[in-house]
Length: 397
Image: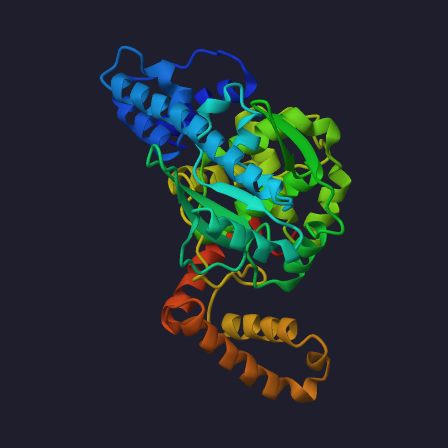
């Protein structure tokens, strides 16, 4: 791991643990460290280390902008949730100022758009009509789990984005993971809890469901666009705050059933090693330190998370090599997922393979809006990520 990474992580660890261990930074490393902080939206955490350097004025301005943005998002969140709840539509606040409240200085967490989840499916169409009648403009975005709106405050002209979720995360090619998500976050099973932020009370996910959601949120971004240090800081601060309220046995079972246990394990162990997460939190779970190091280096290279996209095909497991046989194996798995009953009869396999292939080609051009060649290339590329963590694979081999 290069020196700038090591020094950057030491500063972030100080932030996560509340310690002030001195970090010596050479002048030739300042530019790399400043770039890392900017790429990962953590400028406020490293600001004091740049005092007296040419980088300090611009980084101070960036910190002030982030703090101002926090209060603007807070106002937008309160405005939107009040509108929905005053009209009898219950919604759950995801991430945003809810996670920021776990930070030592909430204003230092970078905030983007507003994410709200409506678990009662019949309320989604009501919310659409209400929002559109009150100045929220629908955006034409292809998504399998949320609707996107932008809203402009009339007096200030400040524009914000709202993601109105009808599923907490997007769909996976691995169907069992979708089933677990639907089950855990269904209206019938989910019991939101209250959280008061800046004298306003919101409904949020219960602690166990919140942690499972963060894992899936990381998974989606890891597979499709990468994610940065910010999500690992979120995870560390949230577990520090709510460890005694989390049912880790539930999380283990959900991850096992979804076949994402390795992701949970590597995230937990990485946060212990590099972010100072206390060892006693879910102490029976561990992961190989070298894999954690490789995982964190990939995260550092990715920068802060990009836009969640659905143009890639993420496989049902990870493969040592990707070739024609691999594509056939993955196609066979997808056939069994698409036709769970008919696939029990081997005689029907040739027909089901053909139908699955035709559906795959159609989805490639109509849903993913890409080409067959590009989709297969992306599949091979994304397999390198699933191979490191063995996503959708609970084996220990």
